[in-house]
Length: 198
Image 1 (cartoon, rainbow, N blue to C red):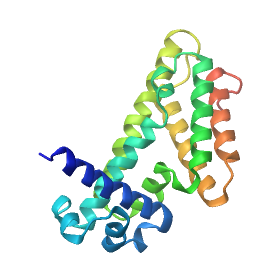
Image 2 (image 1 turned 180 degrees about the vertical axis):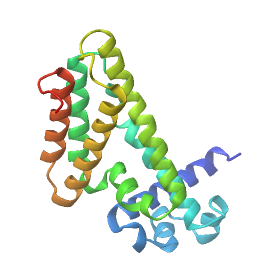
Image 3 (image 1 turned 60 degrees about the vertical axis):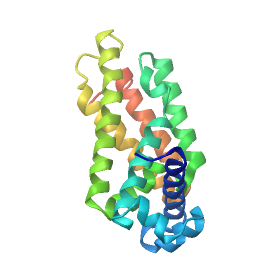
């Protein structure tokens, strides 16, 4: 069990590692870089992460996964009206536009997740949790008659998450959030019944 000071030091190391990875990519970041940024020495790094860089990457993946969900609250937890869905859409687009290449989802998808199976598992868990939250909103709206009976909540929520992921990857490579906006708008149009499935 860590003391409050120990927990703060560990958090500082994880935050420093996340910042380095966002700026330079996971392949270019060393423990020395993380130590310099966090103001810790190698002995401290190995005290908190005895298994080395792999264990630290897993901690960063867990932190970034938590941030993805936190960044969408409280809107994500109350998708029960069309106004709430629009507010969630706007929050998602604005958060990722503002974060740009520093977004936690991008770090998980394009950096950490490709380098460690444990981080892939964290990403998978995040996506499953995120999809369940979106699916719950679709199911509640469907039960209230606000979404057509033929809409499959599991498939629709999966498509929404894929839309966000794809839009974020394009945003990171192009600097434009337009693809993210259009993809989310199209998904919401489909849920509202403004378009029909082929």
